[in-house]
Image (tube, rainbow, N blue to C red; front, side, top):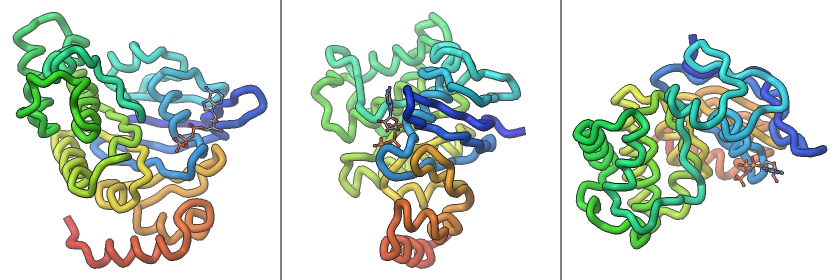
Length: 252
Ligand SMILES: Nc1ncnc2c1ncn2[C@@H]1O[C@H](COP(=O)(O)OP(=O)(O)OP(=O)(O)O)[C@@H](O)[C@H]1O
C-alpha cells in the first residue's frame, strides 16, 4: 500500500479545470517530484492533498484512510504537511521559536518540543541561526526555516513547494543534501520544483502535469525522454543536457 494515493482528483475553479482526473501514488520512503509548466496545477494539487482545498471530485487516501475531505489541521495531525512557495515565517520571532511553533503540534511538553526543534534546525543546517529574528534572514535561510518548521510537526509526508526557487547554486546543493538527509530518516517527500537538475538528482519518481492533466509518470531518466514532457515543459535541448549530466553523474 502506498503512503498516499491520489485517485482521479479533479479541482475546478468555476469553468477552469486546475486538476483534471489526476491519479498517482507516493510510495512510503520515496521522493516524488511534481513538475510542469506555470499554471499546470501543481500548487492546486498540493492544496488538495494537504487539506487546504477540497477536491471537486476524486479521492485521496493517506495511510489507508480516506482523507479526501479533511481540513489542513487534520491532515497535519495525520502527518501530511506542506510548505509554501512564498515563505511566511513569524518575522518578530527567533528562528528557534518559529520551529517550536511546529513542534507544539505534537504536544505541550516544552522539553520534548525544544529537543525536536533543535534536531530540525540541525537537519536543515540552521543551528547557527537559531537566535536570529526570522524576518531578517536572507531568502535561502528563510526557505530552510520553512522546511524546519514543517519538519518539526514530525510529518510522515513532507510536501515542499518550490523550496529551491530563488536560491544560489550553492544553496540549491545544500537543499538537495537536506532532502537526502530527510529521506534517509524515513520521511517521504513530495516536491514541486522547477529546478530540474535538483529534482532529477533526488527524485525516485516524477509526475508531470500540463494543463491540469497528468501527462507522464515514472523514473526521472524515463520522464526526461518522454516526448510529451519535452514538448510541454523541458524543450529538446534541455532534455538532452539533463540526460547527459545524469549519465555523467556518479550514481548513489
Ligand atoms: N484559488 C484559485 N482560484 C481560481 N483559480 C485558481 C486558484 N488557484 C489556482 N488557480 C488557477 O488554477 C490553475 C493552476 O494553478 P496552480 O497555481 O495550481 O499552478 P502551478 O502548476 O502551481 O503553477 P506555478 O508553477 O506557476 O506555481 C491556474 O490557471 C491558476 O490561475
